[in-house]
Picture (cartoon, rainbow, N blue to C red):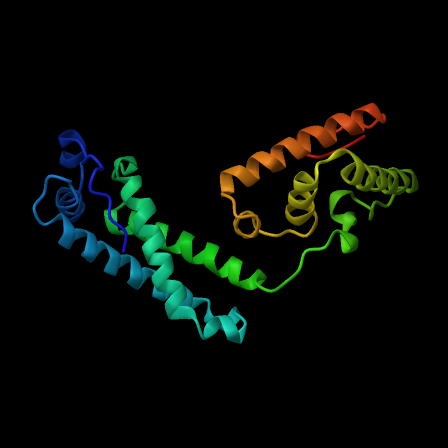
Length: 224
């Protein structure tokens, strides 16, 4: 279970606007509060209940091997959620009850963990991309169909020749295969932010390279 003993507590003006329960949570989690350790343990247990509820809610849609590990997944998700929540404690503004706000961290971490588990053991190869995801090849107009096929070929060619190996891997995984960002980050031993940066740079480079070839590509990915 994670702890953050250096995090500053909420301001008094913030506390005044909150419901009693939320105000008590924030007061107990203040670094200057003597029973902060007990408050953190109670918060972890709250997050764990939320994580367990979420994993069991999704159990029917999960592969059996994942279902057998739900409690471990819930416990790790609760611990990760606690770490993030304590770091972002000052972001809480009372728009909802503190417990409701806290549950969102647990649900997010459970979702990320289950996405990682769903892709565990699955390979991502550059030989079997579904490039049709990047262009509308189902257009009714014959000219539009031709343009879409030509664009698809241009994208595939440019990805193979203009992007760095890392940019190509991330681009193919996220935009072609639809692999979640956090799964890609885990496989690369990186962070979500770093993967987003690689993906952004890859898109920029691809857009410029396609422009040189005569394709006018918008920021949303559309091309003419």
